[in-house]
Amino acid sequence: MRIFLSTFFTILAICSCTKREAPFKQPNIVLILTDDQGWGDLSYHGNTNLSTPNIDSIAYKGMVLENFFVQPVCSPTRAELLTGQHFPRLGVYATSAGGERMDFDVPTIADVLKSNGYQTAAYGKWHNGMQPPYHPNARGFDDFYGFCSGHWGNYFSPMLERNGEIVKGNGFLVDDLFNYGIDFVSENRDKPFFLYLPINTPHSPMQSPDEYWARFKDKPLTMQYQGDGMEDERFTRAALAMVENIDWNIGRLNAILKKNGLEENTIVIFMSDNGPNGWRWNGGMRGKKGSTDEGGVKSPFFIKWPKHIKAGHKSKQLMASIDLLPTLTGLAKIKLPDTLRMDGLDLSSKVLNQNPATTARVVYNHWNGETSLRTQKYRLDAENRLYDMDNDLGQTIDISSKKPIIKDSLVRIKEKWEQEILASKIDKKRPFTIGTKDYYYTQLPARDAIATGSITRSNRWPNDSFYTNWVSTNDSIFWNVDILQEGTFEVFLYYTCKKDAVGTKLQLRLNNSKITKVISEFHDPDLIGADKDRSPRMESLVKDFKAIKLGEISLNKGIGQLGLSAITMPGNSVIDFRLLNLKRK
Image 1 (tube, one colour):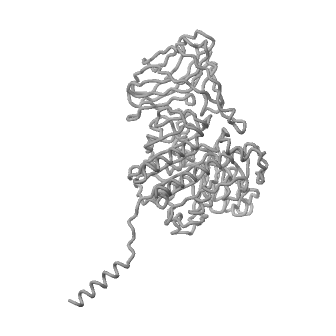
Image 2 (cartoon, rainbow, N blue to C red):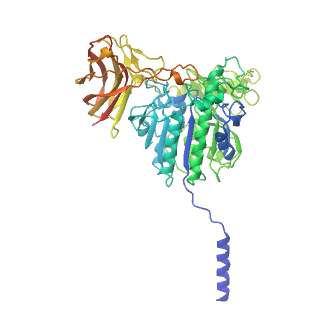
Image 3 (cartoon, rainbow, N blue to C red):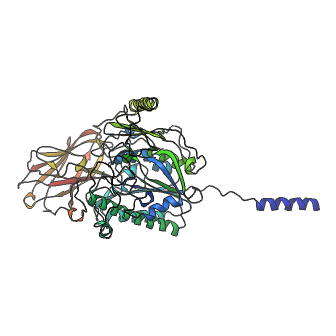
């Protein structure tokens, strides 16, 4: 008995001293994606023109992927990070008028996480489709607040949407988006959550709160673009002011994670969607937004997850936007279905420093008919020139003649990729969808419409545009639509008009279904935005559009042309048109 007790207590002592491994708890995930911010727009990367301590802290407390690449423009990058697939496979071919929509039968990271118990939200600029089933609420996000277009015309209390319903923003847009993110984190602190913050700055129009602009409007720029492109210093100052505002908001978000005891088990990622939207300092790299050169596609990538990711760790591993979905699910220990196509790689072992050796792979960048590719050491550019990226970030010396075997092999790889991926079917005539089951709202903006006769867009860039110069009953606005499920819809029109347009009778018609409405209220506000622009804009100015109910229309399933026309016009013009919003009855 004495021997038994002695043995028992010895075993008990050994067991009590053995450290038990805590059960794995799925991490929260916060993905912060900035818009048109270059790799060089951070003090962490050596830019002394600005200070970004809160963004930098993600790098210092976590790890830095030093060779992280995205696509040259917005919607392709977003499609890739959401799905893990090359964007041409998804039907993405443009940044507006429907070309930004990714195939709706492809699961997103939000779909995957939601099916594994996560609460999901997206606040900001979506830019991958507006009408369900392309809308973020139909792509795995429980909550959405922001705008679905590629750019917006006003960043101060603008017209936005909340889950399809048109609402008015509250204050400076980036601050507003982070307010929603902070509330979401606090409300879901006891559940795993995925918060996607696709922030709209420093994309133009170049607007920022006075406090941030005051820091930069007269500030000398000690670091500038080194190449042949002409830097617009006022534009640069505006962009840097916008980045410092983002940094302040990230500081607020970090504080709320800590306050709620969530910091240790929350993965926080910071990245941008493409290169800088102007010629400014970018680490000596060649190219900017829209270019497939290094400067157009290299993004900052900082990721922290305390007690899991080694603080201060850096990796030269080549990684791309298509790797984000498989890597994040790898970190969260979520097994992806075998049937789910992945062009990206699970590089979670690199992030966790479990497999520090670099894995050989090729990253492809494509836009506007041009393709370049990147290996760990080389970049083959769109004109098949070869550069040593370890020693020539500016792509100044073509080494093709010195490395002909490497060049020829990379040319063949590029041609094979183009034949396989770019041969993916792209249907540019894909209609705009109405009546998706279980979704109440469908927006049909001027951006997605076609106008006839003298009607013109307020700006050549369609994303935040409206239609104006409607001066004849022979002219109309229409959408090519696909009614996915028949139903009756309340239709709300967003318009402005001059005094002499009161009494105009409008008609909305699809095949044999139609409704008419007489405009009875004058509404002719001034254009908004110019007084807040820190640098001249390219995009359309906007207005405070008035909403009225056109009526109720019954639509049958099928493809057709939904048209808005004027039956009578008592004055010299009809209306300026911004948007229809259809609500299922």
